[in-house]
Amino acid sequence: MIALLLIAFMIIAYVNVPPLIREKQWHDLIVYCAFFTAALTLSVLLVLGVNIPSPIKGVQYVIKDILHLNYK
Amino acid sequence: MASTTDITSKQLTFAVSSFIFGSTLLACFVVGVSRQDTWFIVVTGAIVGIIISLIYLNLMGIYPDKTIVEVNELVFGKVLGKIISVLYVFYFFTGATLNARDLGNFITGYIMPETPIVAVLILFIGICALAVYQGINTIARISVLVFFLYLLGLLSSFVLLIKEMDFSRLLPSFTLPLADYIQATHIIAVIPFGEVIAFTMVFKNIQDKKKIKRSFILGIVIAAVAMIMISIKDCAVLGSVGQMMLQPTYQSDTLISYGDTLSRAEVMFSFIFVIVLFFKVSVMYYAFAYGIKQVCKVQSYKPLVLLLGVIIIVEAILLYSSVAENLYFGPNIAPAYVTLFAAILPGITLIIEKIKCTYLKSRDKGLLKS
Image 1 (cartoon, chains in turn red, orange):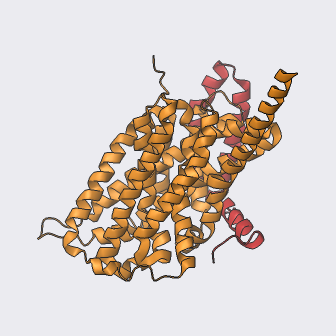
Image 2: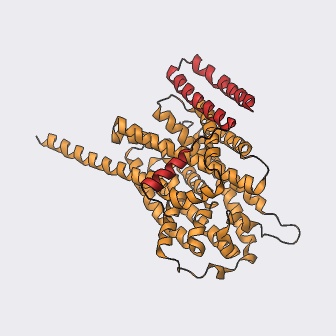
C-alpha cells in the first residue's frame, strides 16, 4: 500500500516539477516542495495507521470547551 | 476581448444557487432541531443569510478587483492581514473536507456499503481537482448544467411524490420552544447561506461588477425557494420518521413507486447529490487553492492542485471516527464556527475599512482647507 502511495507521489512530482524548473520559478518550487512534504507525510502516516489529530477536533475543542459557544 | 477567466453575472447566479443546492440535500442537521417547522425556518434563515451576505458584498464592493484574502491584507496591514487570510484559507479547506466527507458518508452508507471511503474520496477529489485545474471559467460553465439538472430532479421527485404527501404531517406549527427556532435559523443562515462566502474569491473574475450584488442575492433566493420545496416535501411524505433519518430526502425518494416500472428512483437522487456536491467541493477547493496562491504569493495555483487534493483526502478521512461525531458537529459547533468567517470577520473588516475611509477623507479635507 505504501508502494502505491509512493508511486503516486512520484508521478505527481514528475508531472509538476519539470515545468517549474524550466521556467525558473524558484519561489514556486520552494512552496511546492513544502506542500509536497506535508502531503507525503500526512498520507504516509495515515497509511501506517498513526492517529493524526484532526483540526476539526481542535476547532470543536476551542468552540466548546474554551469559548462555550456551542448550542448543546 | 474577454479573458479566459471572465465569468458573467448570470453564471454567478447559477453558481451561487448550485452551491447552496449542495447544502439543501444535507437537511439532516436542521430537521432534528426544527422538526415539522423546517420550511418556516428556511424562510427566516434565508432572510438572515441575505442580510449577512450584504456585509461581505459591501466589503467586496469597496475593492472590486480583489479577493477577500487580498482585502484582509489591505485593511488589517501585512502581519495581522496575513494571519486572518490564513484563517480564511483554513476555513475554505475545512469546507471542502467536510463536504467531501459528507459525500463519502453518503456513498458508503447508502450506495456501496462495502467500499472503503478512501476509494470514493480519491475518485471524487480527483475529478474536483481536474475541474479546479481547468479554472474558474470551467466551473462557472458547469454551474448552469448543475442548476438545471438539480431543478429537474427536484421538480420530478416533488411531482412523483404528490400521492404520498399528507400535509397534516406539517402540523402542529409553531409549537416548538423559541430557543429551537433561534438555533435552527442560525444553522440555516450559516451553513447553506453562509458558506457562499467562498465566492468572494471569485468576484474579481466577474465581467460586470455592478451586477454582482443583484445576481448573488437572486441566486440565494432561488436556492431558498428550492430548499423550502424540499423541506415541505420531506416533512409531508415522511412525517416524524424523517426527523430521525440521516438523509430524509433520499429516504423519501425511495417511496416513489408507480406500478412495476417507476421505482428505485432514489438512484436519481444519488446522481444529483453527487453532481451537486461535486460542484460545491470544487468551488471550495478552488477558493482554498487560490487562497494559498495569494497567501504564499505563488505565480499560479495549478501545480499545487493535486497536492492540496491529497491533503483534503487525508483530512476528510481523519475528520471524524464515526458519523455520530459529524452529527454532533453540524447543529452545535458549526454555526459558531461558520458565523465567525461569514459574518463576524467580514463585519469587522467592513467597519475598520469604513473608519479608515472616513479618517482619510477628513484628513484630506483638512489638507485641502489649509
